[in-house]
Amino acid sequence: MGDSARRSATSYPAPVIGTLQTAPALDRPELLADPVTRALKDLQLADVHVAEIDPTDADTAAFCERYGVALDQSANCVVVAGRRGADTRLAACVVLANARADEWLLYDQVSPSASAARGFATGRLFTTDGRLVASVAQEGLIRLRKR
Image 1 (cartoon, rainbow, N blue to C red):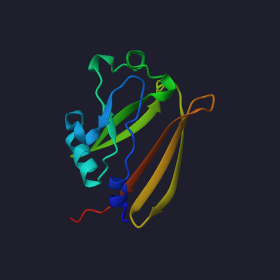
Image 2 (cartoon, rainbow, N blue to C red):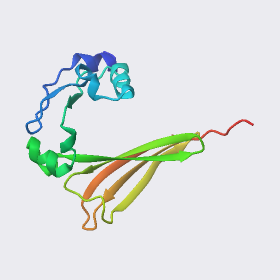
Image 3 (cartoon, helix red, strand yellow):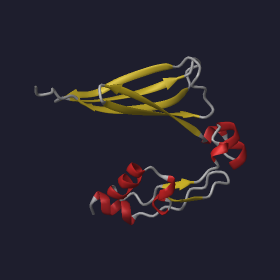
């Protein structure tokens, strides 16, 4: 059985997260950005779920209180945009909600693969007491411009 067939043949129960009402993401495309909807369809990822939240509860503490989600079961996504010329690149880092991202963090980076104009790097962020609070990964491709 191919990988995409295996994905669509497997069915998982809707996740329970506090009092949030989850639904299959493809059933609620209005909660997704268009590229996410396209990727879920292209990859046949039918078992990805979403939950609608009140935007006024986007603050982590308010979210956790309103929906009964413990801090250690919640996370924040920090998105950073960088621009080089006309190109804008985005990077996302998920930080556990019970960690502070506005204090000093140690960033440990490893590049397990870099060859044939491609590179892959992973990174881990630790608090000053050594607790892992986030992990990141990025792949890159380097090409010379023809002039």
